[in-house]
Amino acid sequence: MTEIFSPESINQLNKESFISRLGICCTHVEDGLMEATMPVNENNCQPLKMLHGGASLTLAETLAGCGSYVLEKGSKWPWGIQVNGTHVSSVAMGDSVKAVAKLIHKGHSTHLWDVNIYAQSTGKLVSTVRVTNKLGEKK
Image 1: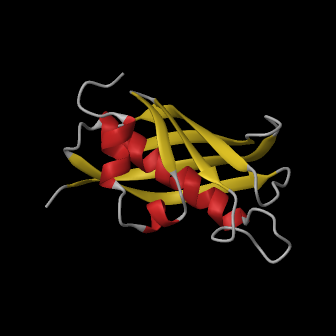
Image 2 (image 1 turned 135 degrees about the horizontal axis):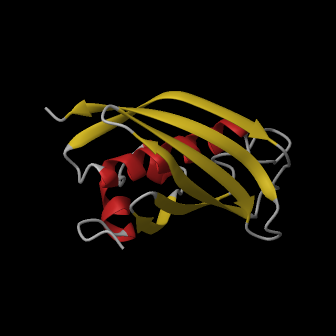
């Protein structure tokens, strides 16, 4: 567990934002490994009552961004500069998803993350996403 950050502190940081409005909840914080959950509900579904692909990308970019923030001990801000996802299965409204983000590369100015998103009810892979974060100085 990272000394400075906890799931609770990350959730507090994201309070009152788009992230919390989607119900994204950080559940595990570790250098190079982050986990979060998100309910599948009317806030993030498409008209067919399935999880919207854009919500999956938001979850992935959020988790990778939080992971980069933790790695930099809050001294730099991460900005997602590239997000590339593949959606392989659907999740119906009423379920929830779990995302697991793993650091692939930690550079001086960029971090690269792989994020896999799974249906909570079945454990089936829903989306796999690669996120590149640019690190900038806090102002």
